[in-house]
Length: 279
Image (cartoon, rainbow, N blue to C red):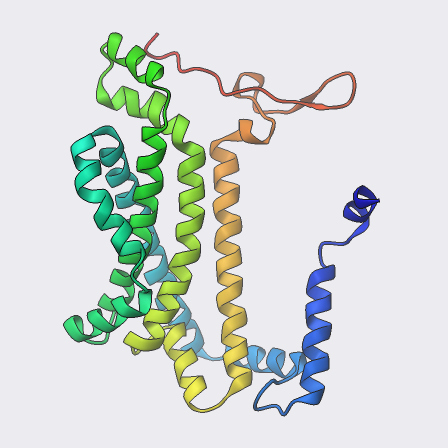
């Protein structure tokens, strides 16, 4: 019965149910509290015709991509150092955990006092919120690697670069992807909050301005744009990971990256091939 429901339940059904609930509530509430989906769509269409909307969108996208890229890059490097060297792990892990437990709004308040309004608070809030998450995830993944694998690499006297490229990073790919996906979600939340409270530009600032003027339809329109950006970024990240790691989806590099079936109809899968450059 459950299998039948899973196969026959359309993916868009929950969205349709949410839209119907939204429409029903909007009929019972005044527009200042909850405008209808049609009114929100009309407001969004109006925003799409304004140049100021695209300026704010470009600023938010630029800040988000820059902050996210720096957070993931620095987090992976810091996590590798923490995982490979015990002294670095003991010294830095408490700071990373402390940073992840500080609410983003507290960072916004401090950074606005220190730096004033502008690009600084949004970017630094992203870094202080997401970079420690990536670093801790990667560090824990390195520490969970099979010791025999690292001992084998040491016995062959492989350079550190070769160990990272062919042993550590492939084994951590799942961890890194999970940490990156988590960081992506935190990036958008922290960025919009920082722009809302600590900036004079971007979608978060436009959201704050609409809230101040009690333009609920405009608030919902900006929320739809922000959610759409987040979902698009996540889909792009997943597609990129599938391309980098095709065997996770049943593909195998030795077979030209094409899946094949068994005689019983099941798709055939393989583990990743071992590196051969240093053998």
